[in-house]
Image (cartoon, rainbow, N blue to C red; front, side, top):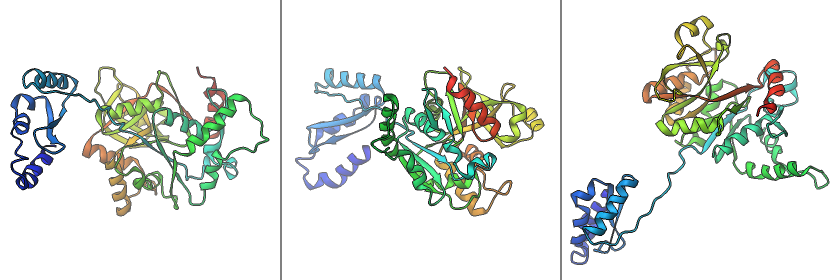
Length: 371
């Protein structure tokens, strides 16, 4: 606003110096008392002495500014409070993998379509349960990273049933809801299976420099709070506006299967962690010795990715840097954390996996029964 006013005074006012001199306007803009309450201000409309617009620093500053303008300067004043724009409105789900750990079922059915009884009692493809959680957390766009040619397979989730297909009332309402979900879905493509990091890199244009939630297509969550697990993650991001990772406690025996976080708890509620290290699938002994947080081990399972992560993924691919023969996400997360900082949030909830037969069996048995 200050820059706009300066440019107007420099380039426009000399064209009509009498009408646009605006002595009263500039006296208000340059008032030292006013400056303590504002980020900036400028004339509006014709730029005469008619109107001035300010951005107040906070609600209290707005109240003090209004009183000063009215009582000290004898000016009419009108206030407007604009709600904060939602910071996280996009999500990414990579689903291009083969699901080999669930062979031979995945010869016929994609893993993310495996049915699970949801807490509302409906049998749903796992992917729809993930969609429901994201949308409940305020996510407006969901990018599925798929193999080329699989679009129709995923869009079939939203195809309308034939007219003679009968559904109970509750399920009929859910069928109608599916069309609103479809409007939120876009696709990105992974044409080579070069690793988790490579898959995420394909969504860089979709992210478009915005923070995005990253969810795994074979994990479900149940919150122990009145907001769901994704909402907990997004809320933590909005406090720090840095790379944020959802943490769940895991056993020492599970560390070779997951990424594991190390850091220090930094908040009074003891659920925000300033992250120091992120290690991909560490050996149990190493994790026990080096990666505990207050004596516990935490795996990383959901994320709010920032632009720094995408930049490091792109560089990693350009340099050909792989781990375990693939382009991994964890090195890019660590690089982004080193450059711009990163936080973990210990999610108050339970994690469910459908990635192996034993885990899928346990999820089907327990997930829908949670209150």
